[in-house]
Image (cartoon, rainbow, N blue to C red; front, side):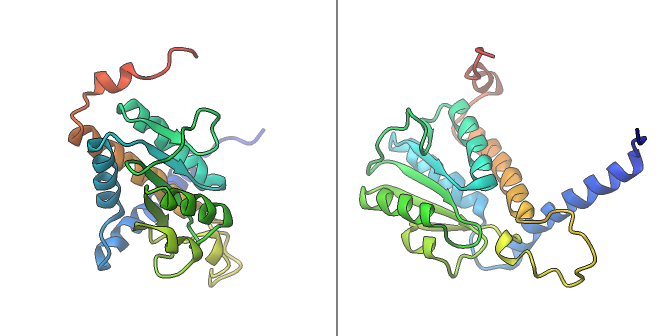
Length: 204
């Protein structure tokens, strides 16, 4: 059995964290509003109008949104993952947060179209804010400037293996972004750590 190499682990962890951090440095050089501000504003507005928050994404993007959905529930919001058996119908006071890193997916398009036709706000998370089919249905676009699987083959040196391939950089940035969103929302919604913790399931 191969021995673990703490130095290699530290180097890989640092490289991954630095790549994810660089995504948020990039946002400061654009004219687009930070995704953090958009999400906090839209979720707070939904809460103020007693609306519910619906979340949807495909693949690993969807897993990141499920993690956010869990924390939004812990913050006291009515939060629902699309396709869960207990997901209610969406309406005019509600908010859909959907992700299409490459700019569009057929399922994201269809769900966003239904949400929009029922009067709900639609926030689209994407790395391609200026193109892609899903942008058409968005009330507002939250830009995450990270490499996705759509441009994963644009690697320059093909001999060097990427640390975060196949859209993992975008998905990792989603996780970090959502942790920032949860932190800010805790302040805005005046939710103490004790109150948030008390909403965690005890059926484990």
